[in-house]
Image 1 (cartoon, rainbow, N blue to C red):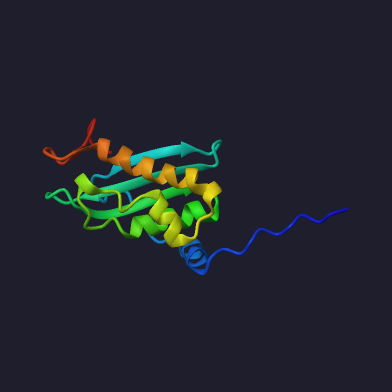
Image 2 (spheres, helix red, strand yellow):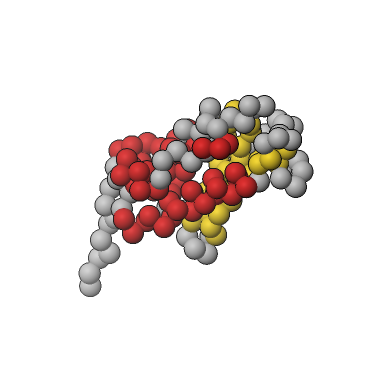
Length: 140
């Protein structure tokens, strides 16, 4: 009987991000208005939810994320979240999923999961109304 083969070890940067998960978790209640962007589903194997706060000039002041998926998905979501503060709502996505995969050595078969991270950020931009500084559809 063959034993199942152990998965390959995670790249050091992915392992570190996965262990720390910086900026993960929901925002604290009562900390102002947050714009949300979500994509994916648990059934698909990757689900991502970003919570973003914006300054009056439209730049990100704070970000939190919640995600379900493999270590590569969670580590990449954390890596992306760390790069969002200070970014404009009009140029929110830092690079592309291909860039992230190359930087973090994410295996090619998992690229679809990184696309969910990008989709969640694009969803957040749709939910942001710059001129009124309110999430589309009202406060969250």
